[in-house]
Image 1 (cartoon, helix red, strand yellow):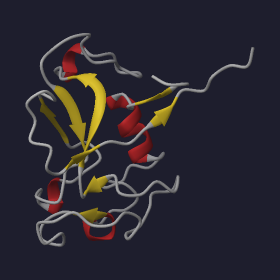
Image 2 (image 1 turned 120 degrees about the vertical axis):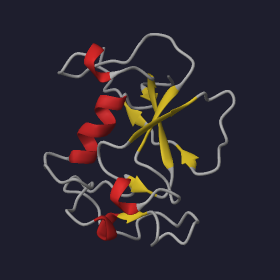
Image 3 (image 1 turned 120 degrees about the horizontal axis):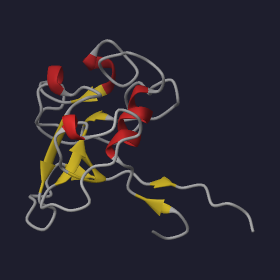
Image 4 (image 1 turned 90 degrees about the horizontal axis):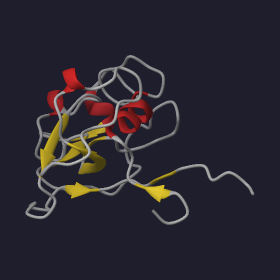
Length: 137
């Protein structure tokens, strides 16, 4: 990482997608409020910040494009319940949020997918950067 900038872990991604709520979709109980996914997306991605944000003012966590996470894919039952980290190695990396080709009912805060980033079809995939707080010297 460069000065603490990096991809979020899968747990971090879900934490900021939920933003302290129990909503099924990031910021709403209705997918149409927050998600560029089928049928609303018309099978294409859209400019950001056009739909409702969650309570932490984070936009576009549902639909539009999948977002890469730091973690390799792993089954949940093997992970810690608090701030889990995925496996240290593997072939596929986690993607979260769904894209414009996902049905709206599936573009939830818990939606996950995995792909091998070396061989991935990058259509409909992007990333969101987070920053680790650097302690002053």
